[in-house]
Image 1 (cartoon, rainbow, N blue to C red):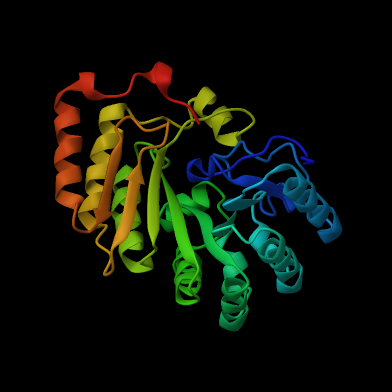
Image 2 (cartoon, one colour):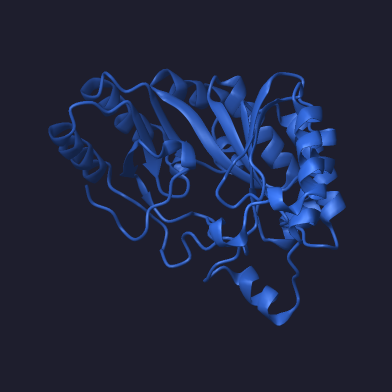
Length: 290
């Protein structure tokens, strides 16, 4: 397999074949993100992708999951994606799912028919970073997508039969906007009706621009207790109309949560409040990582 630069994948894709379809991220301007800052965005030639898949087929007897890297392979035109998906279907018949990172605006640029076409050819799930339900916070971190676009993009994917796994970031708003971040994120989750929602907790690493704001004192991190209070408030409003798998068990999180929205909200809130009262239940900073 040929890779350019560091490769990133969601935690749930730990045992997936990672195939680089694009290099970097087409937006690459989010101030909290350090993942693709050293890469210039580029779409790989489909022939190169198929060569990598052919190499993988010759070396691995069984591949059940394939993740299409880098930042947002969903931005590709359908005819390019379908060529890759069809190759996977033909040469990896045992493959149960094909997933990728994507942006809500990638989904919105496609028609409902095009999204259904991707599902019919084997695209099963798209991971999206929504980060916050607050328009103020989205603008603050230079997300490049609006609250309305994020909601509509997820709805379009789900309507086409492609599951959406949406990530939000605890602590992203800092101490000034944490309540708005929590409330609006909860409301967004309720309105999106995504299949999966996950929370990670803000950690700043170079070359993320927000790290410089933190070092200069312009941005302040929340304490662990404040992060948990923010999550409690978010869960109060995160009540989608259809069942949603919720996870806050990323290595960056102070407390691991697993449940289903909205039926497990109260139990998860109780767990968080218990941890707020007993700091010994929080993950030590030495063991937090991205």
